[in-house]
Image (cartoon, rainbow, N blue to C red):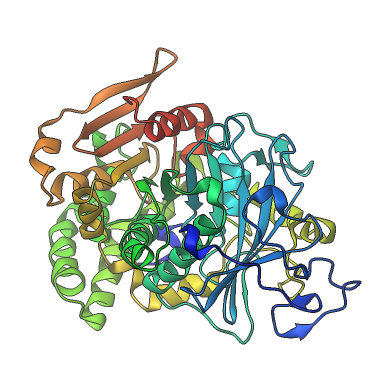
Length: 498
């Protein structure tokens, strides 16, 4: 199966600001302040509040419990000047991950925090921030425009460009990440340093969210954050209040997703009329049992790399490839697929890439000058590398079940018009998943949920798990239905009935 087609972040141990005598570029080269305006603050002030940060210099945060990790952070006037924004890098020795942090438009001193990542693998969260749910959107050549339905309306919003190599993230000597588990450890360490240092956020609810390949990322990242709390408590640090995970149109179980491709193309179960001719649908129907059996035996029950690759190839050819011949957008079956040099089928994403390639914008953000001058929303090398390592074959439903058993709430939301990570496949694994609340969840009917008195989709909820569909939306729900997605987000975060 082509990964590209699967689509496509304690008071006794207060952190001190580690300083350098001169401004330092984190590839180990001493930089003159005149040639690199965002060096590291050379003062010895302890930074305990975001308001203390500079707009011109990075402040560097470290903690002895994480000797391999540090954080560079600065104030940034960017995108939405109605709120405070910050950008910087998570430094893991020779690897450096870029991040954005936007304070809440409502009550940043009290509101929860949403961590957001896109999928891919290898897709920058800049796509999510500036096309879907961030405080501004970049949808044309005019540049950023204020976005009233941003997810930072009632929450603080954090986005990290990961794994290394994605977006403005970079490595000193060609280092790279080969698995989602490795990426999870780096992200969990960053969150520990961030929450421990900026004490105004300690104890706040953290909601880890993402879409597409984030169906793999988010369960693994959240599990690492939860398990890391044991270490934090032992070290006298404050545990992170992981409250929920939110996965939109996610790939969490490939073995369940493949059979759903038949339903989406050949039956009315999808809510749309069949899009393939009868002979094609008959061939697809005949391939479903073999596909399910082969993937379960070679990819899930035990990983036999050669046979698993063969199984994925068979399933992709039989069940996924037919959609390509239709010319339809696999991320929204109601649209044609447009030519794009960034996010497949979405030409408008080139405007985001061009804007983030402007030198003055990169200087404003504090982007390291060693990163490529032309910003790309997708790191295809990362995409290929994780694909070759079979990272996408795993099922993350055991992680999701384990989080539910620990009272971490789980929201699975899906745009009904998406083919690639569709609602049929996602609903099926939520029903199949083994956990203590499974029987109660399966007893619930799908019910209509509304926004402003109008139907927004369907919902099934029980025991901390909610499965939600969004009518009229494709793969990127906040882009297609910004009002409904924000309402869903706010209801979820503040534990109101959907």
